[in-house]
Length: 411
Image (cartoon, rainbow, N blue to C red):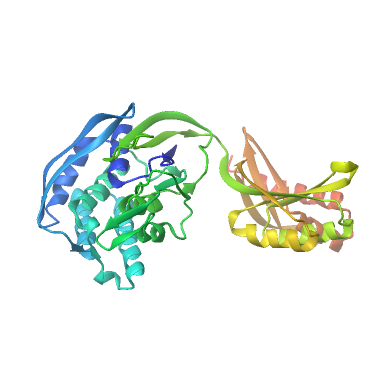
């Protein structure tokens, strides 16, 4: 199964995710009971009413949290809220995975404040996050995730809208997204984006939950069969869009999915020797693949189209190589989704002509058929040692690997 979290338009807050999980099918009575048990661990706060109600947000039928509380505090130490959350999870009797998740969420929130203000984590004080709301969100979401058995599922997060404009809170006014949001998403694999909402769309609690929940980040929906959808409404209203978080549960196909960058440039004044050297240099910089195609461009010029597949992490270094080695004046950059057949890399020892060789091969399966491909560098090395052709060496290696595969087959 795969769960897709879609905060592309309305962003995310803790209560929006909690509501979407209940709308997806989580037992709200279990959540009520769990939160009632958690309430006693945070002194100075009490819950007068908690409910989930159906509302319309710009024509979207969604679920919204109704929470009425009585509090006489306006700040708390982060470690106080952390202890209340951990004690709550233990009192409710949730699993070790659930406890680790809840603890990680509040740790992320505390850590972000610690780094922003340059103080120890034990000294962090929450203002906006000091309310029992934070406990309700994290504990309630943890209960819902366990009840839906989602801790063991693949969870994909689409780009997260953070809004725009400015935000005003206990530390004054600053541009949106605020420092806490940026700190939480820093070094995560999640993608954020702004829009013209002129409001904060993603809250620190929502952000810290996402970075500890989403195992994959993607710009598009994966190929999947949709089983159920949950809609969680936020408290704000906007004229141009529904303030609703959408989550989608379904079954994914047999492919893994990732997003890669495609770099392309045309050159018509570069020699074959330079292009050959260019491929080696680009691969050394971490490219997934490089292809060069010959064609005809404007004014009948013969041209070479250089196409590179790489990841976000390697794009700057590869761009440097492309420009410096070819003198090109521009490189086209685009995003592309890849569907990848699952594969396993094996390292085995084989005997050929009385000599032992270590070799690597990739084994992959599709529609019940299994095959493997030997690493070319190993083929090249072994063929040179044996003084045999690549083709003959590959045939010998395949026979030996197939013997090993058959001997390890339990059937």
